[in-house]
Length: 197
Image (tube, rainbow, N blue to C red; front, top):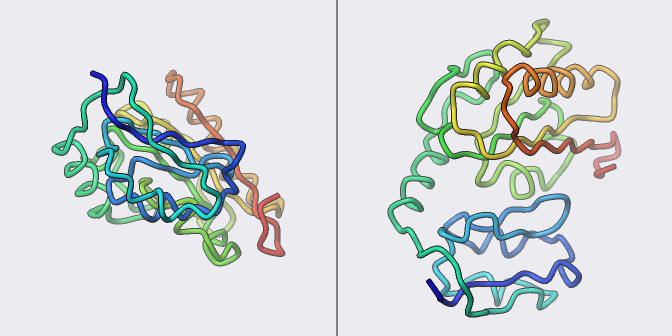
């Protein structure tokens, strides 16, 4: 169907994330430091994100796009707001909130080291946290089961630059291989000074 929908100009986007905060439907996510319209069917075309953008990177356009799916938006918001627990050790391998979700696997320290963690990484994602050093367990098998058993759309791993955090990245990558699924995956490294490397 032809309808009004937002367009994000990546060249103008400064990565502030204000549009993602302003989007009440969860249609916009920050990926690779840029705002992206990840779910066209979640975009209601009303443009709450437009005035929030300080870089004027968002405009309206009329084009072919899926219809706005209010029921899917309500279901998505209910799932992401009702996720519990978040500790990788405690989370079940199957849960309704995993279906049709973007999954974030984060090392415990990242949320404390990076001040904007919630807005930039965990908002609109199902978040699992763990520490490969303190938990003293290999999460590969559990993560592989989560990826195999649920409809995961994307995988983001956030780790610290310190060597012990390599375990969580390794477990996620090995789990993805073991799952046999083709899921887009990105790794973000946070420096000990609190910046994205």
